[in-house]
Image 1: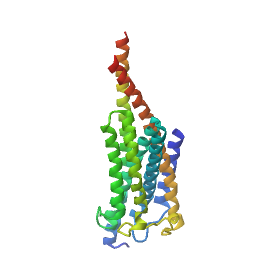
Image 2: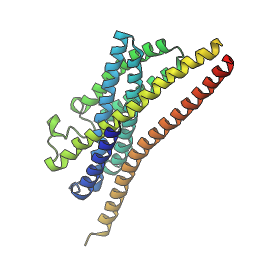
Image 3: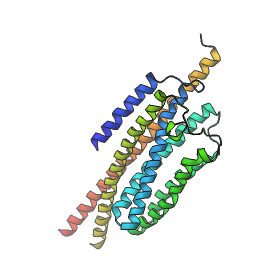
Image 4: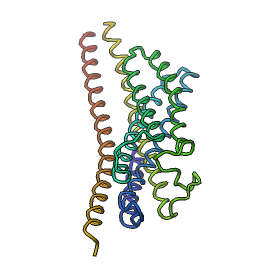
Length: 222
Length: 58
């Protein structure tokens, strides 16, 4: 875990060094375009966390093992964190480039709706006391939320609204010079490492919480 | 020499870029702090419960 955290920190420092000292300002947007180096990798990291939550939820329903539930909640918090980073950095970029903080375009709206649904997932968990019932309900909800993440991902291809279309070459965008594009993928690696570290910490915490629940039951029994 | 209006736009552009990066890291930092606080709460509650169980056994 420490190695992953260290790798993530080193890569982030390298990315910051590269984007501030080697990547030039974009011709039309100027310095603000550099937000893309955190906005896009954060979006991909949030999507990866959501996919992991989806898989863990399916596994929970199949195996009925509470460890999968713990994985699901740990990565869902990562999806919410990186989703919040996407929304906030996107709004700050939009304020300069579009002149507005927010617009109800397809990508922005679907991102916000998915984010709110994952926030609802965490609220649901707080509302249900019994661990297996909580795990089952949360898993079902997580599986239902995930298609929203796919819709968000494809929204810039399906609906041409205000948000820019695909710019990365892996999505046939080709809107960036290769030297300007590579720090995005490298930062994605750093953020994935960071998300993995945070999820592991959260998973260990969830295990201790279960221990706490059993201690509470023992105290009640006494 | 950069015209005055362009210089102001560049300055604002740079400031907002800084806000964007700061906001991103502030969110990550806030989450890490929340994890640490939750961990402390769980540990202290566990200790209290263990003490209660020990004293009940005695």
